Image 1 (cartoon, rainbow, N blue to C red):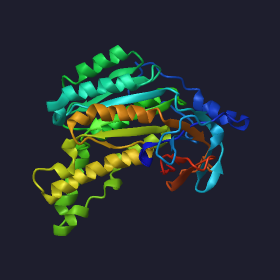
Image 2: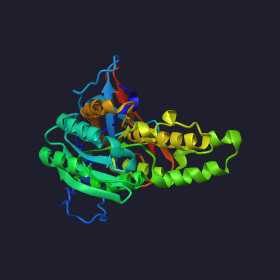
Image 3: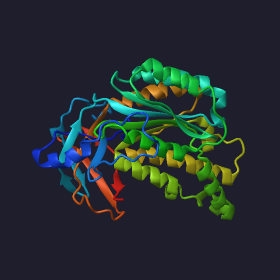
Length: 346
């Protein structure tokens, strides 16, 4: 498995950290009917990670305890204040791209999504969010009722067209996850071509001003403000993002090798990679639509190999916007841990 696959979070509560974690844990899951723009506060002084551990052969190790982990921020070891093993349940938002670009293969999406549900644990809570030209909508609040979830997916995929508000939908999904109990493991699985309409318009303006050989390098994908907003929120909420990238957004599959269009598609795909890498998830590129079911099943397997680790940073009140580097070490030298590389203190 690739190292970007994994994420971190876990541990027992040391008595000295009980006060901190109490503030973090007091918010129970809110009712599904809560207004969309309600804000639920959590203790943002803590950092939540999803961590994957493999042996030298790349096989996942799922039987470790909190004492096997050491967390370092900017080279300084930090106390772990909460830990969850790999079999702890998830709260997961399944995001469905129902824009015009997915109309011709909705049946394959439906079949793959149902296989994904079959691979989840019985206590995993799933919410369904779809996005298209009409905006973003919560089709189903968090539920463990697999029949109800499957029915909602099928109904949702029967409609939808138009543009792709991907980043607005991601921000909305992060708000939905904020209503869940803070210590629950949280993830977003998003099926999309990655071609967010607003970001594409911005990219088009950039390449239109570039000349000749500079077109291919004119767009700096990582500087997009929408992407930055999503990554900052995912950092604060400890959410892992798994994008499934549809072939319709692959820059290598464009029928016409126009440099400007290729640059825009490449930037969109790079942003999907950044969403995965910065949150400790993994980008699954769909080469053929027949791969959908297998890749959804792989995401479910990825989720079942992640530990959750929450730690106290050295300067919890400092919001200077600077990058904080994270490193995870495992007591057993033959094992390798992977998580997000760090975060911006914002």
